[in-house]
Length: 180
Image: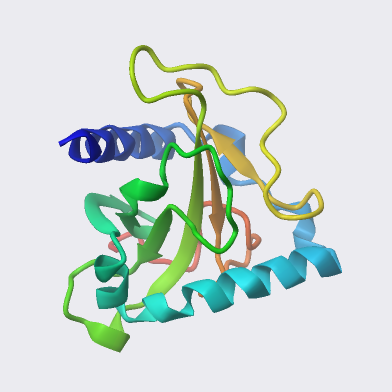
């Protein structure tokens, strides 16, 4: 029950963030001039999430469809067991982003990107305020963490499976149709 409520709250927060991205949604992450360490970490993230091209593996590992489809991004599968632990593990993203989140697609689902979520403080009571600066994720200064408007979360979008011409760490991908 708690995970269901938390998933619903996170979906609402994602929607609010999508509507209020401000300058974070259009920033190009350092022109994608990535360090060799960042490139190695991105390769680790790709290897760790390659199995999720089969969307049924994502469902089997605890990811759930939170019913959130963001234009220019896709639909979101959340692993509630990874949210709120205060850990940023580059091989365990809290969210997987697909073109279509329907189960049963096997290897035909288009896995587009991954997203990391860091909840600031606990999940009970009023939203806590996230500390500034943004959390450390990938090596270097290229990753673009997005704070939520209420200050309760940081998110980091990473286009490891679909090219984003604006940058690998930029939330919205202009190559993705709005009708998604």
